[in-house]
Length: 130
Image (cartoon, rainbow, N blue to C red; front, side, top):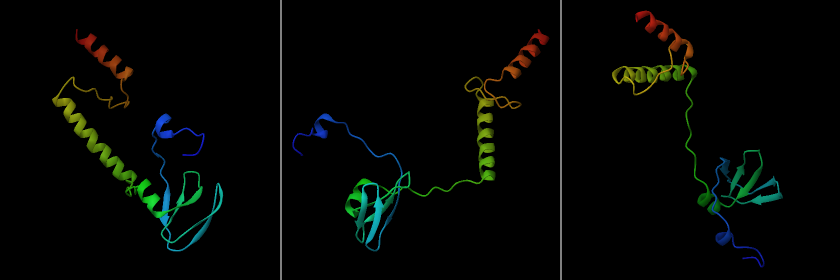
């Protein structure tokens, strides 16, 4: 520890990184302009880019012990989203019909929950029946 500085392990708290970065393992020596000035990297080091476009090198062993790869995620097309939404809505509607009172669905006319307009219409219908 540096003289006169507090020990973060004693008086501090633990933190973990939450932002995602882009990184590439370099196959050649490189130089990069960082926020702290010009830095160099060696073969096998990682060149990283942060959320604001800032770049910096990280040694391979430090990088691998600090970061884990995020799996690539396939994004649905709008058509796939609509089809999936329709399937989910059908399953939920079927469940609601088989288990009355357990869940409340948005009205089909206005797609709102709760829907005052549909509730008022239902009240009028009930009063008319009485």
